[in-house]
Length: 157
Image (cartoon, rainbow, N blue to C red; front, side, top):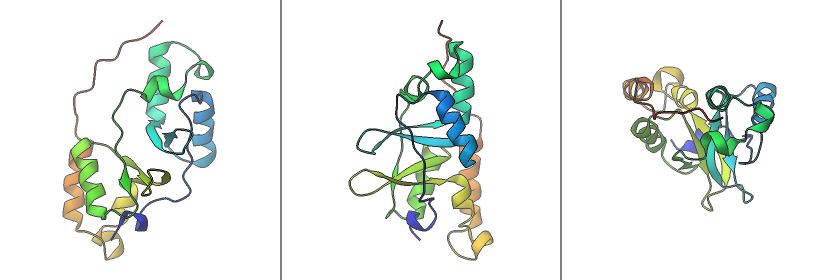
């Protein structure tokens, strides 16, 4: 089974200069908790979550309309997969990097979707009678969900 079978195709995205209030409203209006951040060629350069918005606002002590996506997620590594990748590759990537979502790109590196932990859970043998064993998913869930050290964050004035 490949990533294309599990991913969400109609994915919203934003740009690095999009303000957090706009991103939060897009998330609210579309019932999602993250957005890929893309460049002008629609290539992913980051991902922003609702948690990033909350922590970014708290640390910067500024209104959401004064804070951009880049200022809260611009310095983190980004992991992507291809729509043609085997689903196990996405699973391994999530586990190895302790991430819950992966932007999905085509052969030119352009955003074509997103695959989340929930999308992969829905592909387990227990959920669909196909896909991959639930035990494999349980190991990944443990790795992604366990406590890990966070980088020291500092507030800016």
